[in-house]
Image 1 (cartoon, rainbow, N blue to C red):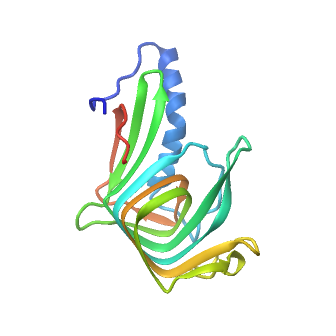
Image 2: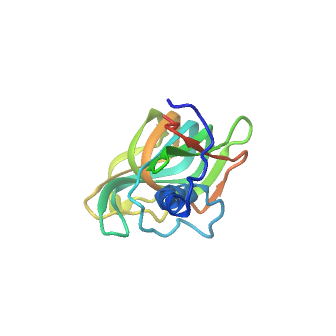
Image 3: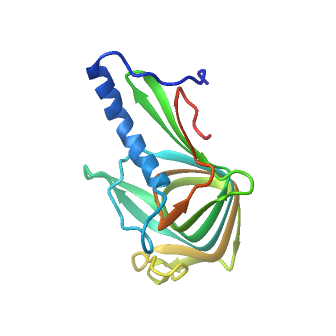
Length: 205
């Protein structure tokens, strides 16, 4: 990987303006993850940027888990099939989120890290527009193949009649690695939050 160095503004207003425009989609995606406070239950859906980002964690433990197929929409009308995943309450240890962006100054990685040691990240009504996930998972009281329109753990998440869904009372994933289009939550508490912008490829995995 390239040497980790601070990113400096390009000389001249025009070049920096272009860099800022290139950075904007990643900052929007990161802001979804870092938005610490939301009111009420599951957040409303929104148009995604269309740029995928990576999330890893040493450990995720959740209560009230459900999944079903869905489609994420961009503001420009593009459609991306996703696995909509909801966890009523989650604790996350060793969280890392990264977005890799090409810019006029070269590749840049935006990193969000939190939840070390005794202070895990805590999220309620966590919703993920998921493209890919890997890790070692344990579920309790899991139901696989349930009609997505009848999902009730957590309450309020349902899909279309006839679509396949699954739900479980609890979920535990170690060595989590996932690629997603969006993350939102009712509340998101990130203790020990660290944000960094690094030149080169420094993604979570």
